Amino acid sequence: SEWKSEAALLSSAVMLSPRSAALHHQLGWLLFLESSDQKYAFSHLQTAVELKPDSLGYRWSYAHALLIAKKFKSSISIQTKVLKGTEVHFALLHTLAVSYHYANLFEESIHMCQETLRAYPEHAWTLNNLAAAQFYGRSITSANMENEEKL
Image (cartoon, rainbow, N blue to C red; front, side):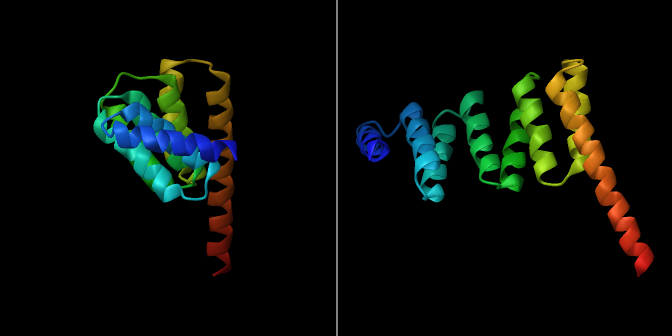
């Protein structure tokens, strides 16, 4: 198929230029999106980060792939490190809030939504995420309280 030919070309390019973060990044995303070998895809995304540790884009991109793969703990870990070392940016705050939400860490999601709104007041996506985190957080708390009462 077409993606396999592209992957073969990118793999050859990586072999010729193993220190190219851009080639590792491209190959990593192609493999992540098209193949079932996520471990190999993640190794290329991680290599891009290691080759260009100051690249916000490569770090955020790797964390985003981990989020999509439902590797929430790893994704959140990378994202919090990225946020500590950079100026506030909407995509970083938003993705971290969403990651916490998907990991069912609603209090943390609410906190990140509030941080995002401080930097980007009245942002529609963030307001929606905040409402969802508050709703699901209350639903889980209510369910836990009901279960405790039954014990």
